[in-house]
Length: 546
Image (cartoon, rainbow, N blue to C red; front, side, top):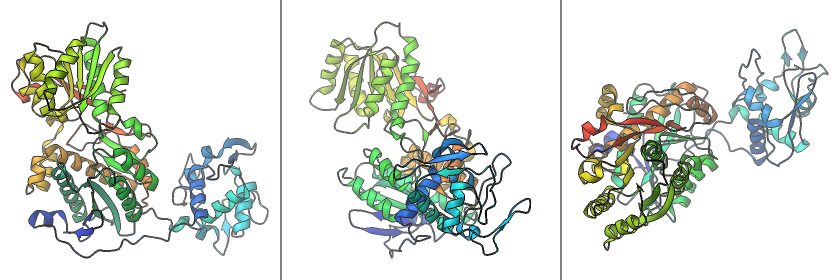
């Protein structure tokens, strides 16, 4: 058992470190001493931070113009097209590109006392602050020799040159937070109270056991995975602030499978501010809302995307006349912009949205809702309601002899395909990001070995599966990155995953412009004569999103 694995619980004012998953399953959670988180190097100064941004992006943090001049003809390009980090790498040691081997630009190398000897016999003195800035501006080495024409020169302000030189003095020891020579610290976020606590515990325990297994096999290139858990206050008014404070203080290398219903944009924003990658199962919010954070990777499609697959599936089955649509969503609970995305998808299909309304099980609302929607000649009902809510609506619709098409995410619908009135099941369409048929026997055996002692994981199988798959994706990304580990390198490795098999869900593919690994959903029609859920799923069709 690894001593590096630990749980961290953070409430309104408490910090608690807990033993690994096996100990949690064996006994009650025990409070132990708080251990301070040691950073790998001193924080960068403001000038060094500006220089780092300039080095990695080719853009001036002050808003000044940065221009790269390429080759003997001095072809002018925007600085972002020739950022230093693109060739010299996140760590400054150089990355071979098209037969060219960029030089090492770490300060130790640039200032070595005996100078530099280049191919062809060119020798020059070591750099200092002034000569390095002059070289980046003119392409002339110390002593007056002309430099390599494949290296661009730059036109930028003296203050930007100063910031860039300041950062090059630190690049050799600028290690991303959460990484040391012996450890990689990753974290998850789960609710500390409320009806979803057990699901959060299932996610926590599967992640802990997954990383414990990695550590028992030697870790990642000799580094142990340190796993931390932030139990977030359930109050949505204070939870975002607590999370932002925690992320800034703890600085994990990455977040894996965070479970934060209702505050996903705040989690995303806090992670973006701290440049923390997120590897998560799926999102309530439309994936497009994460366009500003390129370090978010989702395994499967979220509710809004699942609704889009069902709309695309049903549209050809209707007669092409004006289709009148209503969208129902949980009363008093956030649906995170999903409604707006679904409305847009309806319009794209040529459908008319006659109503979007919250729905609840109270005061005869199912009957009233049925009367209202039927009176509006509604053809299609798209539901984000929970299983009890939607079942009550369908039973009221059947009693009123009304049978519209009903589209609902399967993850919210439970056994609805079997329990819904038969007259409705003919037009009940469900979407699932994964199905049991996606699960390979070997992966299920591995998962069973992780969770077989824990009641929470047995009761929340889908959450356990999602957490295990997220851990597998993160682990694969860390392994592909290699020993020279940084967040930028991790993102590049994950963007190179193609049809990666977790054994628990459809193959996952990412690119710089694709942030959902399985970008689609399984769509099924319940059917009036099917009382067997297994037979139902055999009719599922995979619908890929563009």
